[in-house]
Length: 183
Image (cartoon, rainbow, N blue to C red; front, side):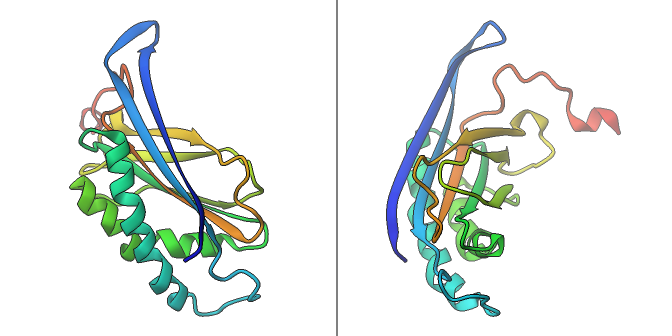
């Protein structure tokens, strides 16, 4: 796995809807800009060798970093793969939609639900939203949220941006009724 850089973002929301948020609502994102392991190979029918080589290492690298950046217990989480223009969306999906990647974050967050994801092919500097859901119950509406990020110089055509996002709480000032009230 060839990593060009790792970027960490945190966001602390102190006010929402004209009201204070106390404690501030924190979200963290860690992104790795890596060389696409299938770059320059044309259509690759069997992605498994690349998955086995890269996905576990990425999960092991990113999961503790995003938890540390959050600095609080994880309540919501998500993941992303943005593939450079010379790659395929499937290349990003291959790296993040495997337990070899996601289970590192599940363990670090004490989570049980599926990780929501965004994956797409895009040019460097593209803005993307990472969706987040509650770590143990995806029906908890207050934790359905997203965080917007971008890497100014990535992904280059032969790269993939792979990331994890975490929130220490639901949306600031969340006030939707629980899903169970609509059944």
